[in-house]
Length: 510
Image (cartoon, rainbow, N blue to C red; front, side, top):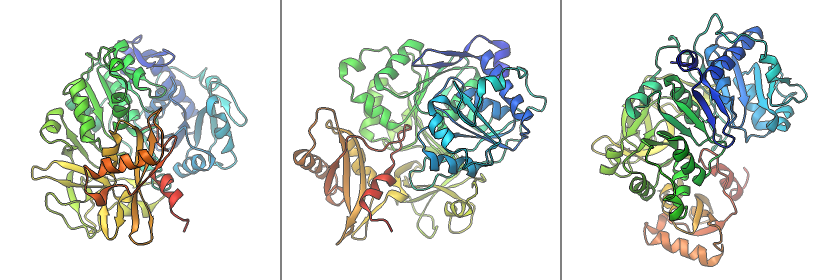
């Protein structure tokens, strides 16, 4: 149930295969590398409960570094490789990191935070060195390859992607169980998706995000091979499924959309018959998109709704979804409540804030105000991820939108996800965001910001076409009043849209 146990049985089996370079890290190498680094942590004075942070691209040693911290009983924060100086320094300081690890490819921004992060005592750099950093390879070279004497479980402390303000670090309690004991996520994965040591898991997203990191490590606990894409490309994804006989993978809806917009001859070119489970989460999936994926891949598309906070978990099997299109599932962990602004429970069919009653304790590290903001107004210990939705009579949950994205126009609540879902499948739209912008009369009006498909001309004709397309299919008050065009939208590699950045362009600074 961890790399050492797997390495003892199948030492030469690939634990990681990098999709672009083909570089392989075997289970023996994963075990030895994580042990060397765990010894370095102890030699540097770190004890269980202390903290490290690392900012890396999808690197061959990414998971080894995470395992080293986990096996040393440390909190570990994987940081987005897209952050700049101020954002990076904020997270390193906020989490209390005593060690910071980066790579030569990110040296400029890594070095730029040195003077602003005085709490870091050890700075290591992979694939080269830079001012203020020691060579990672030299630092671990002479450390023992056997486990540290006091091996115990650590935990990740990951930060939100900052789509709605300063990133929040989710700090869970450290596990008090032996390394060999399956955690809750592993039990859910094995129970729902049936992986084995023979499974091949394809991870197409940045590993610093919660789901790719946690699922990759969970599949390695089982002894599966994890194929890591350096960055997502729709055709390469299909090629990798065929090349490595991928059995399991986790995606986000924008990846489905990009694959569906490939030419039909390209989509039919690859043998995807090995794929047993395509898991998706992170954002609502437009119903037509998921229907098309089911028609293409068969009933193997599984969905869950959960968050980095770990306060609840809902699941929709392919059969559940086909019977109830649009649902994100039924709760497997945590009782779901739909509440109004005062915290009162709402009946089935009514939209409100989604709360979990689960007993899970978490905090946003160093920010008690943010921690309180996600707790229910009546003080019952329920917590929310900030989403709006409704339950049907059978207890199945449907997502409406993020609470912070809601548009209020003339006193009417408008959820932009509806128009976004509709426009995302238009053949001339590559990407889209729907936001509220200032309106003197109504307070806010609905605007679409669109990235056209290649070779599609942006302009008044396309704007009129897209508005008419929405008005034919949605109530008019939900439709964009105007459309702006961009070469590219500010989207996180995990698929999340930085709506805050778009909104800030249209709203005057307060």
